[in-house]
Image (cartoon, rainbow, N blue to C red):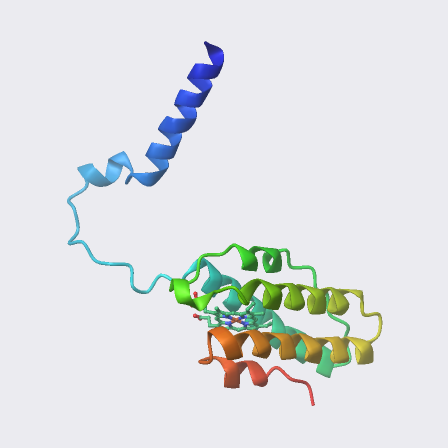
Length: 146
Ligand code: HEC
C-alpha cells in the first residue's frame, strides 16, 4: 500500500515537472514565443569551461598556479546539445580525452607543467570541435599559451 502511494507520488511529480506551473495560467498569458535565446545544457558548460580557460591563461601568464576542480566537465557526456547532430558516436571518446587532459591540469604542481597541461587541454577542445562544432575554434585557439 505504502509503496503504491510512493510510486503514484513519483508519477505525479513527474507529470508536474513537465507541465507549466499553476500560477502562469492565472497571470495574463504573454504571447507565446519560442525560447530561441536559451543556450543548451552543453552550450552552458562550454561557456563556463571557456571562461575558466581564459582565467587560467591569465593566471599562468602571471606565474600563478591555477586550480582546476570543475565537476561540470563530467556532465559534458550527458548534456543536451542545441541540435542532436552536435554529438555523435565519436563525442564520448573526445569528452573522455578532454577529462583526462583536465585531470593532468589538476595534478600539475608547477606553473610550467600546468602551462603544458593547459595547452594539451586546449588541443583536446579543438580536436572535438573539429568534429562537432567548428564555429568557436578560432576563439578556442586564443587560449593557447605561447
Ligand atoms: C567532446 C567534445 C567537446 C569538447 C572536448 C569541447 N567542446 Fe566546446 N562544444 C562542443 C559542442 C558539441 C558544442 C555545441 C554545443 C551546443 O550548441 O549545444 C560546443 C560549443 C562550444 C562553445 C560555444 C558555446 C555557445 O556559446 O554556444 C564554446 C565557446 C566552446 N565549445 C569552447 C570549448 C572549450 C574552450 C573547450 C575546451 C576547454 C571545449 N569547448 C571542449 C564540443 C566540445
